[in-house]
Length: 348
Ligand SMILES: Nc1ncnc2c1ncn2[C@@H]1O[C@H](COP(=O)(O)OP(=O)(O)OP(=O)(O)O)[C@@H](O)[C@H]1O
Image (cartoon, rainbow, N blue to C red; front, side):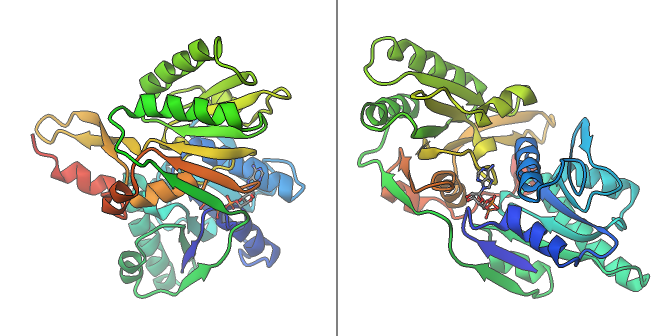
């Protein structure tokens, strides 16, 4: 089954709970994959809190180097890489009765391989007369036709509604320097909005985040307005530092989170009222001659822009400030090229 619902409609946190409350997983477990570690952990913690249970009990998570599950776990959040590792040992994934592949639009190599593995596991389990495997593919912004065809015309369900509206603003002119544009937007909004309105700014990598962080600290020494607490969020940051982003700021202090696309999907950071989207992402590409991996800054696809905007308005109405024009947005491809395709098409 394919499940499409707007960002913030409750796919990731509510669907597994509904399945579990109806005991549809039977004697097995529900697995929910996420492309990123930080999302996996924070969502599992949130769902455990919503179910009023200890993490590692009925609700658990598994990421690289950290397995917080037990024999009791029925709702298990895990990175796509972890499910892939489990599939190497048990290709039929027998301990799961329901597998939810979330954020399908991201099309990482791991999730693309998992799409095939779960399809094969489902067929093989039917042939071997083992317990049935239910597969749910979820996203807010995926290419439904391609997936539906791949899964033998499976049913597609559209979830309507979201908690809070997000107003989108586009830049009126093309920005030559998106880091500078991001800084100007941060300080324009900072001068007018109350301090409890926190900002989430999308940049492309650690170096850029550190530069913008330094500039914010320098400018705040002289700029008017409430104090600013700057929080970086990128994949290379130790997990404990990543989780600082979810910590409350002192009263009357604005939180400004400078993140890469790891904050783009699934995560809910409370009190984010403004998303500032530069419209760029650093993508992995490969040199097929040498096999060397490279990172390149590219414009992100329409689906990613919608995901980023969706980070505002999760706990109250919000706004997304796109530092690119509406014409630029319309010209972007709706979906990014799957990582697996980029892997095979880069010849240098
Ligand atoms: N950690 C949290 N703190 C506060 N509210 C939260 C938290 N996690 C989720 N929520 C609330 O639950 C709603 C649904 O979140 P959920 O992640 O299930 O949505 P989703 O449909 O999967 O979104 P996305 O497509 O962006 O992943 C959010 O909009 C938010 O209101």
